Image (cartoon, rainbow, N blue to C red; front, side):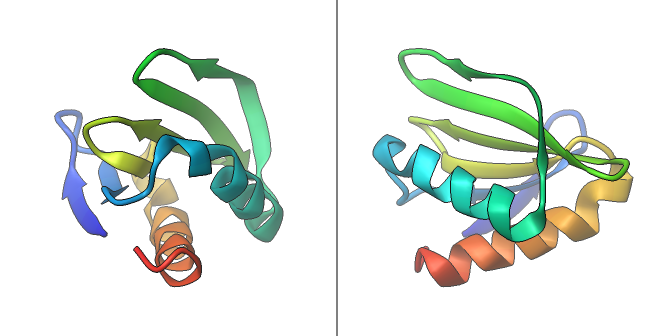
Length: 96
């Protein structure tokens, strides 16, 4: 697991060893554990999968791409504590 700021300054955690086939399983587990509500539909492309989720006013992205693996990012600074919790959960549960 590595954390960084993307080009928009959003806090992002990457799990490079998580394969595309794990996206749905991990995302369903995270959504259930953190009581997240889906925003929009899941977008699937040849090398990416992503969807935004909300808990209260906090919006996070749960994503996967072939460069970074599984990705958790904060869509606003207020969501950073939630993103840290989710990243910690993913790290422990999926040994990344």
